[in-house]
Length: 67
Ligand SMILES: [Zn+2]
Image (cartoon, rainbow, N blue to C red):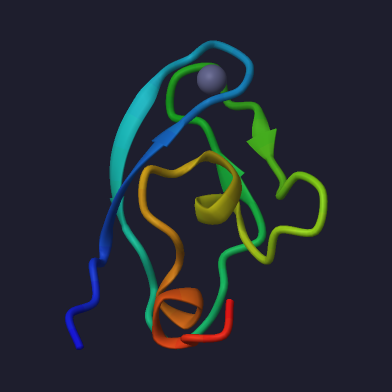
């Protein structure tokens, strides 16, 4: 199964876009925007910032066929 590790994350504050490489072993809960320095947190019940703001879901979700 192919896992996509690069996700383009979009800041909810200033709409700055940045391509980041996601960690495979854990979920990243906080992300600081490189432009406005706002710290993004997951929205609703998302497990990490990449699921909320990224173009690609995080590796643990990609590996779990039930979600
Ligand atoms: Zn920003």
